[in-house]
Length: 259
Ligand code: XBP
Ligand code: MG
Image (cartoon, helix red, strand yellow):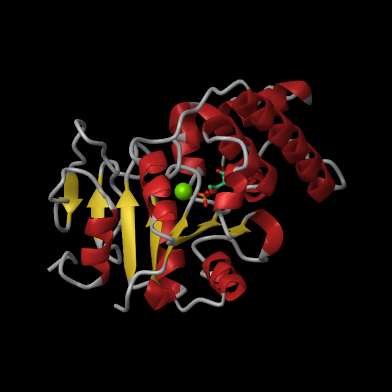
């Protein structure tokens, strides 16, 4: 791989553990707002995560888990409306500061910024959700830390399709060989790999730990912090105990890739 120029981050599960305690309860609150008795448990949500995108996930739920529901004539409009309510609920939860960034995320973003490394986001979630999370967890103006934010319906096909990573690279006029992608899920890794990323750093969470990360360069339980070591599940353990720019440059230069 060529010299490292940019870091591209997934959001949900990677920057913060938003799925179980952020998106899932926001969906449930939107269902209650709409007078529906649907309840997405922690376990059911794990199965629903096989489909990315909130609107797509609601449709999948109806197709697979709630086939008896009497569908309105305009199902698409009904789902879009439910999803709008869900986004409002999610943004309100973020404004309360209910979900912190994962360990090492802020440290690594700041280190990369100081070193002049370009930063970007490639996510499936709705753009407003990205600003809500960044706004509640990073200093004012932190949205500007990211040169490009690729999110939601800006591309027709969500992860695992490569489209969102390809779109971000296009906006940055950047070849994937100069960048590292950060992901938490198998779908995310597939998306980045198919967009041409040769280096992908995975930080797992409870929902994704058992997924297939064979296209990743390293799989860790977190980015780690000084004093709180990152545990490596595949690939080379960071010498410092946490993922920093030195480690990423070694990864980019091949010296720390999975043998
Ligand atoms: C995760 C997703 C999203 C969120 C819900 O995206 O698949 O659908 O679960 O957000 P990523 P929306 O890991 O790529 O950040 O309801 O806004 O889709
Ligand atoms: Mg994710």
